[in-house]
Amino acid sequence: MNAIDKILLEKIADLHEVPHGAYNIRKNGQGIGRNTTANIDIITKQDKPGIDIIIKPGTKKESVHIPVILSQDGLTDVVYNTFEIGEGSDVLIVAGCGIHNAGSDDAQHDGIHEFFVRKGARMKYVEKHYGEGDGKGRNILNPKTIIEVEEDGVAELEMIQIKGVDNTVRDTDVILHKNARLIVSERLHTYLIQNAESNIHVKLMGENSSAQVISRSVAQDDSKQVFHMNLSGYNKCAGHIQCDSIIMDNAKVSAIPQITAYNSDAQLVHEAAIGKIASDQLIKLMTLGLTEKESEDIILQGFLG
Picture 1 (cartoon, helix red, strand yellow):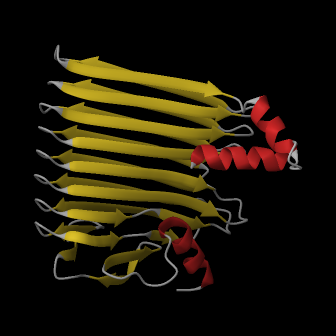
Picture 2 (spheres, one colour):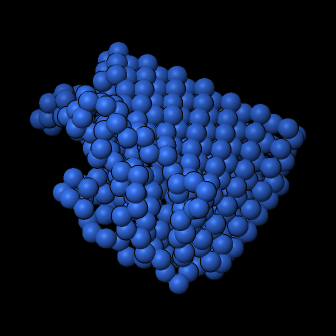
Picture 3 (cartoon, one colour):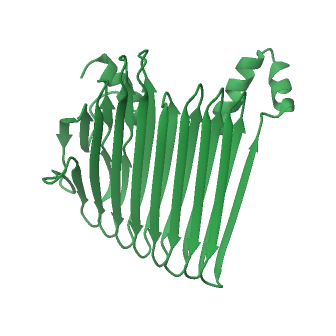
């Protein structure tokens, strides 16, 4: 890996060196590094590009890193990854994609990830997206995440778009069974003329299943954002959607939360708020000697966490 590759890996996976434990690193459509453990196996798919990640039942305190990096313009990289999270396991999965585009053509990564979280298992999935480069080509990232959580299972998702992504369509579909839980934290930042669309659809099928989906975003310049958040309750269940956005300059943000109950014991709530930075926050920081721009940056960093 060269210096650019290392910068991208640090941005999307907090990696300063080859990680411990299981990992698969993909660069420009090809695998460049892989390691498995006694409890986590990684197998190359035979019918299409991608890998199967198999985590044995009862696996605890282990992690899997599967970052993707692109440094070649004109490339559209599509990958299909399937995760088998064994019964009673508790694991961390770190994914994400970083693009360095110094050319005139677009660079694009479409990642389709399918997860099966088995009975009583817990998975934390962290996905970060980042783009850079001084070329005229666009950085395009289109993740699709499909999750099924079995009885007593937990799926926690942390999905972050850091910067530099010119166009993205993010699709997330989740099915929850009895006593299953979903926690989603989405953070998105767009600027210039970037476009972002996020579609999250959760089906609460099982008795006492629950979902919490919190999305925070900042839209600057002439960028556009659209959020479709949809909870469907088919049983006694509880669900909460919250969309909060800060809008600046000439940006446009649409938040479209939807809740649908198919059972009288379904308790579903949605909230959506779009607004500018509060003037009192700016004034407070500027009285400490910061410029308006410095004050805005601090507020935005705190908002996006």
